[in-house]
Length: 102
Image 1 (cartoon, one colour):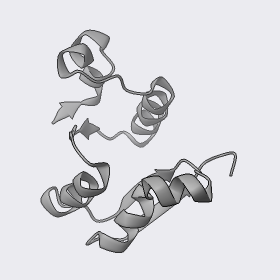
Image 2 (tube, helix red, strand yellow):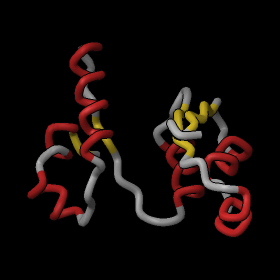
Image 3 (cartoon, rainbow, N blue to C red):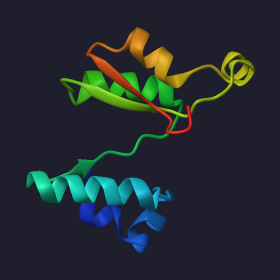
Image 4 (cartoon, rainbow, N blue to C red):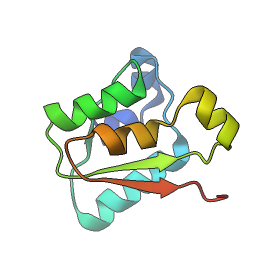
């Protein structure tokens, strides 16, 4: 588990071998400040479909919000859809947020 303050530190993220999206971090920081909540993140390595469903069971979560990159039909068939898999296999309600260009 990683506090949001550490996730924003590039040196600490280098230690974990990750590179978080700066826009996403800014959104999370802003929301946590406005709502006055402490945000702690957990990093999973592996197949995102399995790891998201595992997180729902292990943390446990009441609700999960996942993004959708808006892949075309061909790419979705070839690569599979993480959000679709999680919606169908998660043990909690899942909200899928569509990509802005979709």
